[in-house]
Image (cartoon, rainbow, N blue to C red; front, side):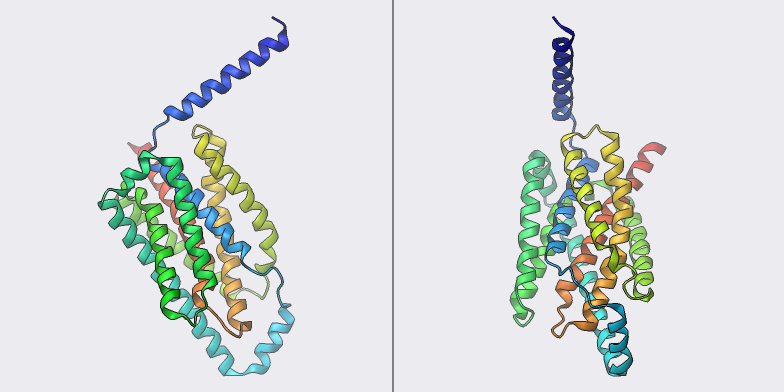
Length: 290
C-alpha cells in the first residue's frame, strides 16, 4: 500500500477507536452536568437573540437622571428590586424542583437517554422561555405560569446534578452567590455603558462556548474542550453578569412598560451557568483529594 493509503487507514482506525471510546464512556454526574451546561448555553443564546442591539448614549441617560428628580430614582430602584426578586425566586423554584424530581427518579431516566434527554430539555427550556417573553405582563396569571414552568423545566434539566451531593451543591451555591452578587454590585455602580459595550465580544465568546459545550458531549475525553467549557465558561459568564446587570439598569431607566420577569432572565441564566461550573470544579477537587 502507498503511504497515502496507509495514512488514511490509520486515521480511519483512530476515528473508529475514538468513537468507540465515546460510546463506552459512562454518563457520570459530571458529564450530565456538562450536558446541562449545554442546555443553559442554548437558553442564554435564546435570551440574547430576543434583546435589542441599540442603546441610548450614556450622556443622554445622564441628562434624563439629572432632570427627572427623586421620583425617577425611586422608580428605577423599585424596578431593580422587583427584577432581583424574580431572579431570586426563580432560582429557588429551580432548586426545589431539581431536588424533588431527583428524589422521584427522573435523573436516572435522563441518564438512560442522555443525548436525547439533553436535546429534549433544551427544547423544553427554550420553548418555555419564549412563552415567558411573548406573554405581556398585563396577563398576570399566564405570565407567571409560564415563568414557573420555565423555572421547573430548568430544574428538570439540572436534577442529575443533585447526585453530586448536598455538601458540594451547598458550597457551589455559596460561591455562586458571592461571585454573582459581587459582580452585579460592581456593574450596578459602574459608569454608564462600561459593560454594555461588551455585547458583541461576549456574543463571539458565547458562540465558542456553545460549540465547545456541544462538542464535549460527543468527545468527553477531550481535555481541551473540557477546560474551555469549564474555566472559560466561568470567566465568560462572570462578564455576562456585569453586562446583563447594566442592561437591566438601562431598561429600568428607559422602558415605559418595564417587565421585571423578562429583564431578569439574562441574570438568571448567568447564575445557573456559573453554578454548574462551580459545582463541577468543587466536585473535581474533592475527587482529587480522594
